[in-house]
Image 1 (cartoon, rainbow, N blue to C red):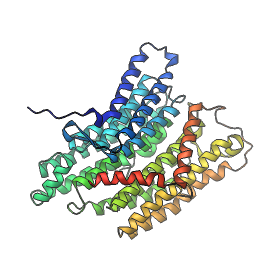
Image 2 (image 1 turned 45 degrees about the vertical axis):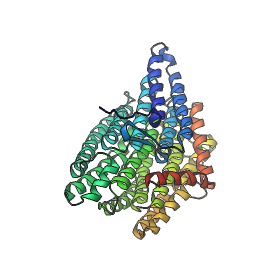
Image 3 (image 1 turned 90 degrees about the horizontal axis):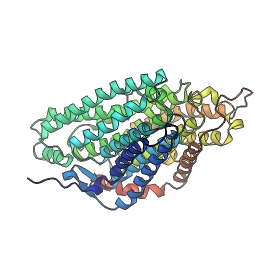
Image 4 (image 1 turned 120 degrees about the vertical axis):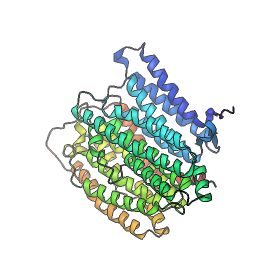
Length: 480
C-alpha cells in the first residue's frame, strides 16, 4: 500500500497554531484563574510565529497529504489575512471576553479551519476546513453566557451554519457523482473529457456549492443571520469572523470556480453576477436605517461581500487580483473599526450605539480620528485603502464587459456615503452629555487600532506594495 506524502511544510502555519492551542490548554492547568488573560499573550505569540513563517514559504509550492493541500502563493496570501484577523481577536479580547484557555484555543482552531479551507484542493479537505472553522465560531458567538443576545447569536449561527454545511456537502456529492473525481483539477479534467455524461448533476453541484459558501460570505438572500450574530457576539469575535470567514470562503470559492468549474464549462457566472448586485445594493440600503454600530457594520459587511463577488464574476485574472486586494483592504479598515468599538466598550458594549459617539472627538480625539478614517476608507474616499480596492474591482468589471456590475458598484458606493458619514458628523458635533464609555481601554486595543490605521493609510497611498505579491497569488490559481 502506498501512503500519501504528508509534507509538514504544507501546513506549517497550521501546525504552529495547533501547538500553541495545546500549549495554552496545558499551561492553564497550572495558571491561577486570575492570570488567565496571560494566555492571550501566548495566543498572540503563536499567531505572530505563524505569520513569521509565511515569508519562508513564499516562492515555493508545498504539496501535502497526497495532493489534498497546496501551500501556494494564493493560500499564503489568504492565510496572512486570516492570521491578521486572529491577531486582532487576541488584541481586542484582553478585557471584554475575559480570555482564558478556551477563548485562545477556539480562536486558534477556527483560524486553522479557515487556513485549511483556502489551501485545500480536494473536496473532502475543503469540507473538513469548513467544519473546523465553523464549530469553534458557533461557541465563540455565545461566549458571553451572561448576555441573552450572545446566546441568541450562537443559536442562530449554529442553525444557519448547519443548514449551509448540509447544502455545501450536497453540492460536493453532486460534483463527485457527475465526475467521479474528488480533486479540483481532476473534476475539470473529467468535465473536459466527458462533459455530457451527467450535466444536471454538474450544474446542481455548482449551484449548491455556491449557495453553501454564500452563507459563509453573507450574500443575499443567505444573509439573514449576519446582523443578529454580529450584534450579539462579543466584539473581538465579531471582528475575527467578519474578516476571517470572508477570506476563507472567498478563497474556497475562487479555487472551486476557477480550477474545478471554469465558466466556459459550467454556467455559474450569471448566478454569481446576479447575487453580487443584489448583495451590494441590499447591504447598503439596509445599513441606512441602523442605529447600532455593529449592526451597521454587519450590513456594510454584506455589501462588501457583494463587491468581492463582483470580482469573481469578472472571471479574469484582473478580477481575482482585485478581489484579493479588496479583501486585504477590507481587513484593515473593518478590523480597525471594530477595534475602535472594542476600545470604547466595556463588558456592556457601550461603544455599540451610534448615538453614543456624539462629541467623541472632544473626549477621545485619537479614537475619533481613527474611526473617521476607517469609515471614510469603507466609503472608498481617497487616499485611503478602500479607494484603490474599489477602483480595481470597478476596472475589472468594466474590462470584462460587466457594465451593469460597474453601475451597481457606483450606485452602492454613493448610497454608502450617507451611513458612513453619519457617525463621522456625530463624532465632530459638540455634546454636553456625559460620556458613557469606560475611562480607559486596554493598551492592546490601542495597538490594534494603530496597526490597522497604518495599513489603511500606507496601502491607500502605496497600493503597489500589495499588487505585486498578489499578482503571484493570482498566477498560482491559474497555474501560471
